[in-house]
Length: 354
Image (cartoon, rainbow, N blue to C red; front, side, top):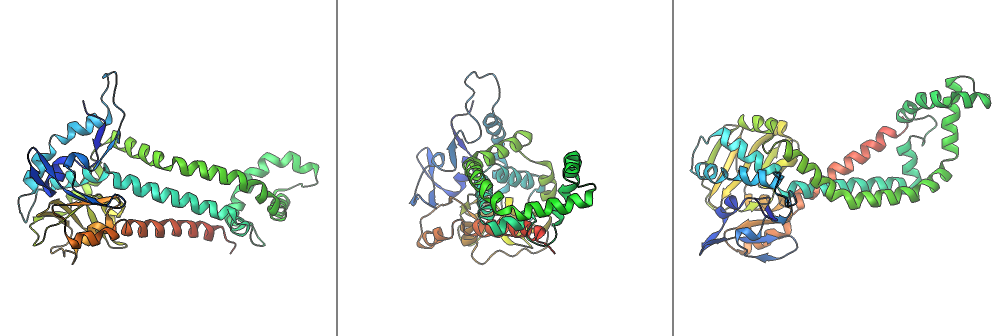
């Protein structure tokens, strides 16, 4: 049975980036808000009850039990993949990369940040009467397509009552409904904004747990989602021995997305991802590519740092890596900000009158 301290990055991977002292292996952790320290591998990449609560009755298998059982085969897979090779086993590489990226905390934190940004953006829309008008589709002289699409159902419900005020057909009703909402929108907005702000505040509080539950449900279905594995099997995998020591980002792997550049692999669009980089030891880099000769980024450790959220780990403490702490979250933050802003702008654009 597994314990409360549940690793979202397995120790078998972390040990490839540390130095053994006695029975334990120690890594250097470069963190976003906890400084730089050197924990043993059981002191980083883990969180209490990250996947599931302990099963007190011990009658069922928890999600963490399933992950712990699955992990038993990871050391052997890592040992094989850590051997330098121009042709690493694609099935092993695809399954390992898939499993380690879908289970980690980086994806949970990134989706939480995106969800929070979206909720805050929507709150800002409704706090402003002008943007609320645009969003609701009553900013122009004619109803937006969204507003108009709601009218048939409303007409069906209100047709008997509409007749009492002299509205005898749907066309008259549509004109009346639009003008009523547009004319009375200031008072409608004043009434709804307080309630909506409280609603958005409640949603914001629940965003992290919603993201966690979504990840847990996904992992319950599969620890190695078939579609992702099948896609990654198409890549040519090789294990390189880089000239300089590499770090392990908390996103585990990054991908070169042709539309968005280098991203944490879970944020990249696999249909447009040409190359994948996953460090599997401080002196080993697993590379999957759809091209014959993939190019390593000029400063791959800075790339890994920027794609990390809370931390990256390394074998050693160096001045250069200390400087890369300032890069933590930058890539993910930038990607999420653009994604959320585009989604909000698009929603407003669709609701703007033509």
